[in-house]
Length: 262
Length: 290
Image 1 (cartoon, each protein chain N blue to C red):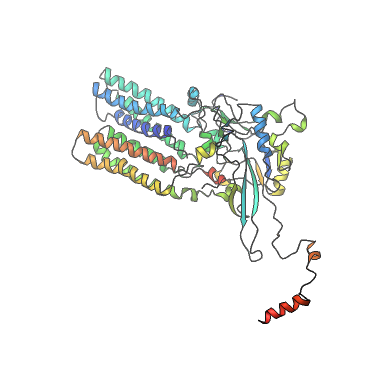
Image 2 (tube, each protein chain N blue to C red):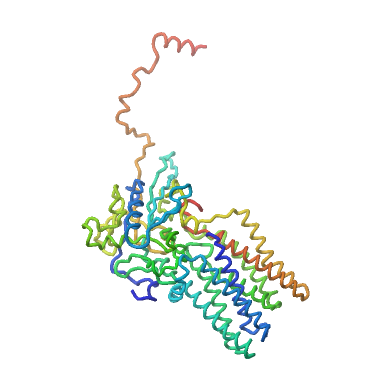
C-alpha cells in the first residue's frame, strides 16, 4: 500500500469478501456482538474499551450491534388485523465498494484493500478526527474513547487468513459463533460462492441503496410469515377441547329460562 | 450532529480571519507599517486560533501533520493544505508590507485567493456528506463563503462592501435554513430504506442494541427542540446580520463598528451552533431518532 494513494478507492478489488445476514433466521441473541467484542479486544489493533462499565452510564465501543425493529404490515381486506413482526437486525461494516469513509480520511489511515475489498483503519495513522464516522450512513465506525482512534469491523482479517487456526475457525468471529446460522461469510466476486448464491436465491438487499455506497454485505429479507390471525384453524387440539354441554339443563336450565322471562 | 464547541469556535473564527485576510490581500484597506501589523495580527490570530481550536477535538492531535497528505481525495486534507499555503503567502506579503514597506501586490492576490479557497474547502467537508442531507447542497459553500466575506469586509472596515455582503449572506442563510428543514425528507433515506423492511409495513425501532448510550448517539444523533431552534435562528439573524448593517448605516464611528463586529461574531457563532445542532445524520434512523 503506497502512502498518499490510500484514501482513494481501488477501481476494482480482486475479491469482494463480505457477509450475508439473514433477517429471517436471526433470533436476536447478541452472541455475534459478544464474540466480536471478545475477539477484537484480544487481537488485532487497539482493544474495544468500555467506559463506566459498572455504573449507570455505561458506554463502550462495539463493531457489531443488533437492533430490533417492529414492522406493522398494512391492513388489507383479506387481513384486517395483521400481526406486527419483530425483526432482529445485526449491523456492522458493510465493506462498501464506494466507501465514503475512505475518501474523506485526511491522513490515509482508512483504506480499502485491493486484494479482497476489506475496509480497514491503520490505527497508527489515525488522528481521531471522526470524519469517517460522519461519512458512514450505517454507524459502522466508532471512535474508541480510551484510544482516540477509529475502530471498525475488520471482517476478522486476523482470523480468515490465519493458518494457526483450524480451518473451520477461519471465518469472522460473528459468523463462527452465530447459533442460528444467520450469518454467512464469503466472496461476492465469485458468482458460485455460498454468499452469492444465497443472496441471489433469497433476494439479498442493500441497506440505504440511495446513499450510493454500494455495500458488499447483503441482507436477506424475512420470509412471509404464517397468518395466525386468519379464520383457518391451525390448533389441532382445539376440537377436542370444545365444551361438552352447550345448554344448561335441570335446575340451572329452569333458572336460566325463568330469569330470561323477567 | 453534536455541536462541539471546538468545531464551532474553529469555523466561526477561522472563517472571519480568512475573510479579513482576503480583503487585506487585495489591499483593502491599503495599509502599511504599524497599522498593517495590527490588521494582519488580527487576521492571523483569528485564522490560526480557529485552526488550533479544531485540533482540540482530535483523538491524536500529535499526529495532525499526517492530515496534509491526502489532498487528492479528502476535503479535510485540502483544507489543511490551503490554510497553510494561505498563511505562508499572506505571511510573506504582510512581512514585506510591515517591515520593508513594500507592497508585493500579486502575492497578496494569491494569498487572498488561497484564503477563500480555505473557506471553500472547510465548507466542502460538510457539503460532501450524503449522510447529512441538510449539509449536502451547493448552498453550504455559498453560506460559509458569504459569511466569511461579509465578516471580513466588516473587520477590514470596508463598509461599502459590508453593506452589500451582509444582506447577501443573510438571504443565503435564510434560504439555507428553509431548504434544510425539508432536506432529510427529500433525501429519500428513511427507516424503510435503512432497514430494507419497508415493503412489509411500517418500521418502528423496537429495541436499541444497548441500554446505555454510545459514540454514534453522542456524536451524530444530537437533537434540538424546534422551538429553541427558532429562537436561536432569530438571534443569529438579528445579531449576525441585521444589527451590524443598521449600525454601519449610522455615519462613521469606530465604537459602533466595534459593537457591530462583536454582534456579528455572536450571531455567526449562534448560526454555527445551529449548523451542527440541527443537522440530522441518517444513522439516527437506525435508532428511531429522526
